[in-house]
Image (tube, rainbow over all chains, first blue to last red; front, top):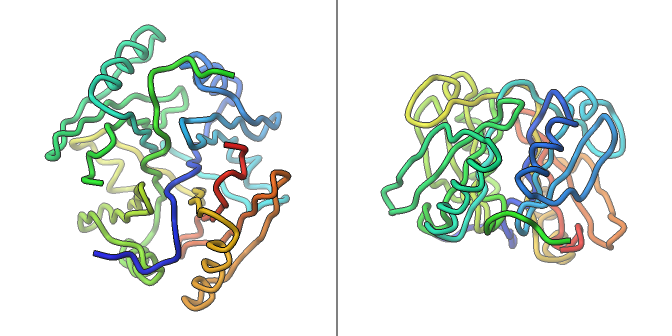
Length: 135
Length: 135
């Protein structure tokens, strides 16, 4: 089925909301992600492969400012993709080394697979092998 | 600066929460995105380029089930990337044709630019030219 819209690359930034930005920063740094943006009390931004994972303090992000306000309460969800089964195995070991518990593992009909963990704020983070959705 | 983690492609799925799944489905279909998953009362999933935009009913997604529960309240945020300035111009026209108001436009120091609009649930959706972050 064709898409009937102008060119679209993909999801470039996903936002999660956290109760403690310092804790979020330590968590993602410990997992080895590169900090690429920070505004004290408002956000920390991390590079996630070719994209960005944005961690916001919801109250601060809801303040009117330069960009349209947003901010949610409750556990969000994001999925990061890894190239293949071997990479996901390496992530399993990487999470264990960092003391991050795997909450759930899931196989998909395509043969793909996912590993789920929580960030310290309770957001559900998924690592999924690329191609699990058939594209 | 090197990343010290196993291979990571990027953000593959971003989740937004909506109060009315049928309205969300109509909205993203009208913008020409391809519906690739649907569970009545729980979610509609759309293909967004090489990735997925997930729209959930938060109450349903918070129910314990096969995958770890999640669900947030309040306006979330996601950024979709387009290849270049010309694509963004085409998206501006595409939004106008669909009756979707542009809330904000933003230029970036890199020379990149963004256009922001709201989905019917109030989530802040950004279209950003790839490369705006320098990678």
